[in-house]
Amino acid sequence: MKLTPLIFALLLTACGGSAPTVNLNIGSIAPTFQTFRSDGGATHFPAAYFGKPLVIRFWADWCKYCEGEMKAIESVYQRHKGKGLEVLAINTGQDKATINAFMKKIGASYPALLDENSAIARSYGVVGLPTTFFIDGKGIVRAKIVGEADEATFERQVLELMK
Figure 1 (tube, rainbow, N blue to C red):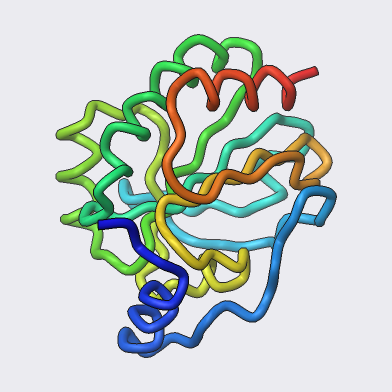
Figure 2 (cartoon, rainbow, N blue to C red):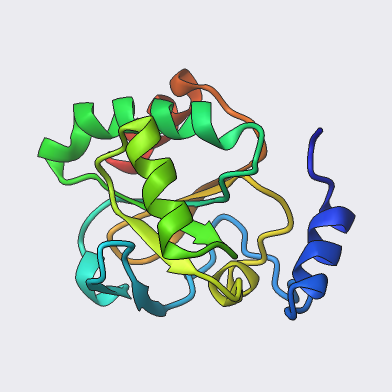
């Protein structure tokens, strides 16, 4: 089942959040955030990522398309991390144990971040999972994928981002 924007907004509302009020598009400045990685370390965006091409992926373990796509992102990440590519997998609304189990299951080496109250997702205007943002070293959104995509699509977007 694909998660429609209305269903996702209702899920966010049911979890104590509210529907996204922003529409983050290409050319927008990516919102700043501070959170914790699933390993307990702190993460600050954009401070820790200035000057680096960055992929931000919003996901949850119940998302039908997230597992396969996160494996595809891992392949792209492995090919380009030596050239400076960073990937952040922001989990929307789940706890650390669930996140760690999923990341271990799929074998992803990029960091998973906690967004238990979906505040970061709302600040990015996420209306469905998966949603992926490609952000340049100056913090500008250069591409956005809402919904399902394959490894070739991620590869193309990363190559464009790294130009």
